[in-house]
Length: 251
Image (tube, rainbow, N blue to C red; front, side, top):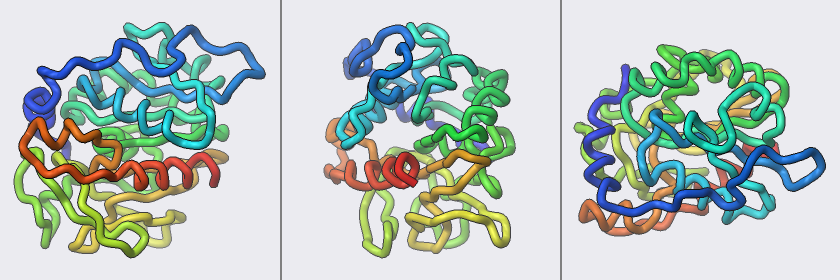
């Protein structure tokens, strides 16, 4: 099922907050031989604050990435040619799945070809849904569904809230807004990093061809103002986002 209501609630959370116009190092596509390129989608299939949070997370890692935004109104277009130069492509949170796929469906083959050929894909919330198949890029050994619809879910609506997960065996609390659960095929080649408290998959890493895919349903990339803007207590979870990124980039 597609996530519903993300657009309005994230607009409420982020709509009055100013966001940076550029990611770190925003510029045209790199010439070969410089720092590893990370492309973070920013455009109509995302919402203000979501790409910027992912860019900030990746900039905090040890990989010395040259982080650029990509999208229809960015200096770097999202295309097979730009993806071919990237170490990692990150798909942040955003609006509904149906809306996002209308904008990104034409890039499905380019993204699949990039990852299959050895690229890396990171998907956060909506980016996790888009890694699935109905609709999506078809990067997972299985599909996605709304966590809030799963038996025993601790969240039952699409509001901005908190969710508990067991991340590598440790209980953690993360920002959550109608994120996916990941439905793995029997015998799937995947490493589960986190489960929701009802046992459904909240974060995983899996190969796709010669590449790797990492997806997460909650928002480990969330910054303090995501919480305070909607009256939630702050939980700092960048270490979890970096753990996911590390499993994708270094795996």
